[in-house]
Length: 168
Length: 168
Image 1 (cartoon, rainbow over the protein chains, first blue to last red):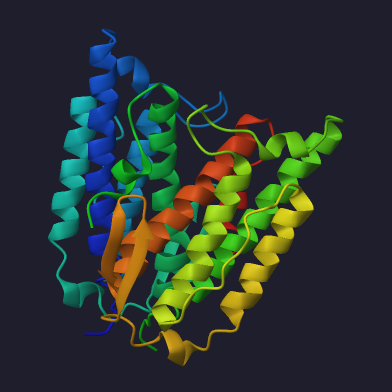
Image 2 (cartoon, rainbow over the protein chains, first blue to last red; image 1 turned 180 degrees about the vertical axis):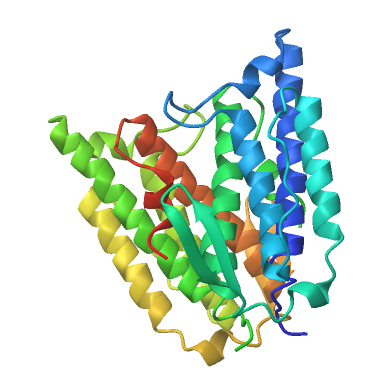
């Protein structure tokens, strides 16, 4: 079977989000073991001018859910960005997972040259589907998952790269 | 044109390495502006039990060059891991780029089900080519590129996500 746009997107995103949930659970368990409010971690940042953990998780889920939707040529479901607890972040990820799973392979397959337009801070950006997936969504998704991991690792959570990569 | 194993590997790796060089140059420029020896940054870590910048760059290049080689079914070129300056890290990346570019698309295309065996600290791990690329090499590559970025960002380098993602 040859590689397809579906196989290179939805299953990659689902696995990244699954591993992100695992990493978040280890972060929360660390706070509990140290007897402090895990919600304090949600505002933790690598540096004052980087985004806090909550935003890293929000953007990672957005990349994944919006990625599938745009490749499928549909308007992405919008999330509220109002999470303030670990439980709410997990619910957000669960909701993104459910949304990603509702896309059928044939909605995303063949999207290599589909025009994708996104709004960024500096204006509109246009891609072909393949470039959007490989050079925008995937690097962005792993950027934010890695940053979430690094924030929790700096906070002392017992994490290793295997937690980030998950089981093969 | 439909997505292929080559398009999902070599160009993605080359772009990640190109952006990594750009991020490293900004880190080095920051040290120069602050008038300290940039080599001090090479040993910087996010936490004491994470790998320093030099190792992040070494592993990122390994993921990229070994990824292409293993998908093509050839034994990867081995690098010495003896870099101790920014110039040497750039030379390592240049060498990886040259190596990746020497693979022809038809050596990597069709590797979806090719058996890939890697040695890890916990023993041998086997993959099919597609899983190796999507669920091991790509997440690992971006993990180490993001960590390198985060180390330099924490050190005060003037970096934003656009530096990590590069130009479309």
